[in-house]
Image 1 (cartoon, rainbow over the protein chains, first blue to last red):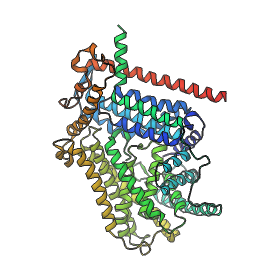
Image 2: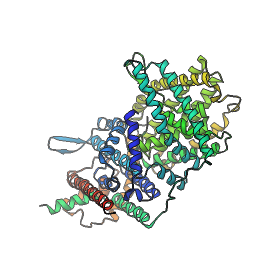
Image 3: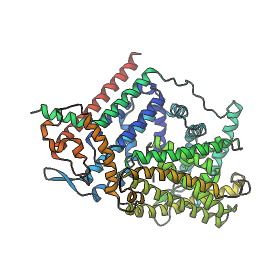
Image 4: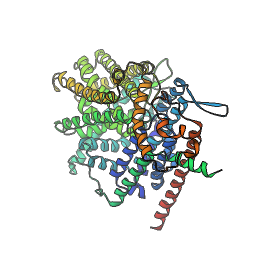
Length: 267
Length: 349
């Protein structure tokens, strides 16, 4: 993770705080639908491409309703791509059985499954990123707790998130001062050890101070949310519509059916 | 070595979610009863520290590359296995959400691979026993390197097993293992050195921050073994469930063969039942008439005889491609409409 990665985090926080139709949907509904979405997408057999296409509707609709800039989501996706890409690229190398030919180009089964992997990558990562961008960390934490995640763990995630900005700032300052003093040479290991060690000690001191301050203000281990979420009819409708869409897209190849209709009508 | 959503099947992802979820619940109960009252903010800050520490790299002499702290081992060393595991899990959750590192379905795998092994194997069985309270010495450096290497090797191997069991990647198991283990051996050495450097500084500057061996009681193997046994039983149960869906499942569960076709056919058998459903419920009865019945019915396409999935016929491809492109276009159109309505709605209010 670089400094730009950290600044992106601030942007994500900003997006999560917006108030749009997508942000107003109950966080539990979005978590549930996103989980089902990912499972359904990954339940397709390995060489499926066209039946996966309709699933694009969900992340696109969510980001659009939430007014999340697509370029931002796209950039995050590219940063996350390498692992799936590196492992996926072995499919065309290992599996060279030809399955189709378009003109002079022979398409092997490996390329089909590679394309399928990358499409799934876009779908699952897109859904996860738009879930967070359209919900925000605090609402997501509250939803997690109401969905049965242990409270200690939820509090841990929210604490981590709150400290993240402060400690990253601190680390960035230390790094900058080390860079200036080292005249462009990379950091040596000895320096690194004491630098990180001091970062750790200061972080621990800060935790102590913050904790005392919070206890003094009546903190008893519970993170409070200003508006306790209420599950409304519109949230239930959102869940039902999305699940119906996923089920029908799983059972029927909607893209193929549309293609047939068009091919049939065209001539 | 984060697993990615795009490479695992829902069954493997779900099973690992169950295992990791159980571990989180267990650790959360343990931490709740812990006596240190500042443990909660300390855990939060250390999670943030691991993030921040990854922003700072040091150069590895002679290689031109750089390394940084991974985090699993040092968290366990500072907080003990239970709290350490929770912090690692929270770091991975935030990474999955904010950086799409891994993904949500793969989160269970990642928490297990990167959290369970350092916190419950490498720390209590190797690091704590080897160090035995002598943090500033050469002994501690060796302990950290050995523990980090073992933890990462186990994690990397586990990644390979999970990838294989999911059957999305064609990469043969042996090749994958040979690819993963050496890389993570090197990463483990770097991680161990970085951990030892930080721990030795803390030991000098603030020894009371490190858990002393007499304080946390003698390192006992039993609870760890019980946990390993439970995890193995869960994983084994899931594996046998798969194995029983096919006659020759034993070979699969032994995971010896290249396994591609076996895993593939397991997928196909699952898919075949869905395809049958698809056929029964086909909502366009005249859906297949125009292209000859031979290759178009979905059940035919997924027939188990089609060993390595070849049955993508030209007819299917054309309608698939046309339909796919149109669907994507439609999805984008829906997006544009929703976006403009969303903006218009705000403007009106």
